[in-house]
Length: 81
Image 1 (spheres, rainbow, N blue to C red):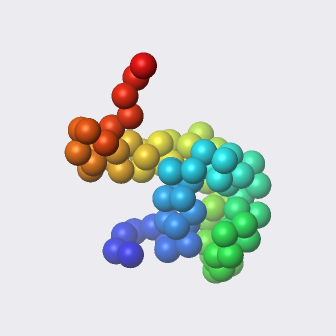
Image 2 (tube, helix red, strand yellow):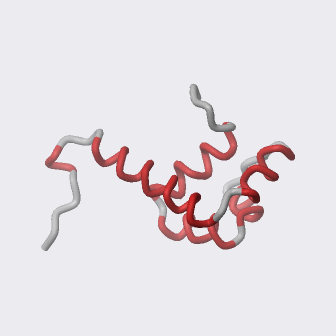
């Protein structure tokens, strides 16, 4: 993964962007989220994740979710009823 985010946090945030239940777990009990998917994180990653304010973490998840939809062709976008 080529990014400025630590890899463990990147995995958690990307999973949260496509799985609403996991996103709530990540937001409510951050330390347990990595364990839930068997992801080992460094002590630095755990500390960094714990330090991110919830509002900022929600915004990061939302940005990734929006970005992933934007990459899909229009026929794959969710349609309103």
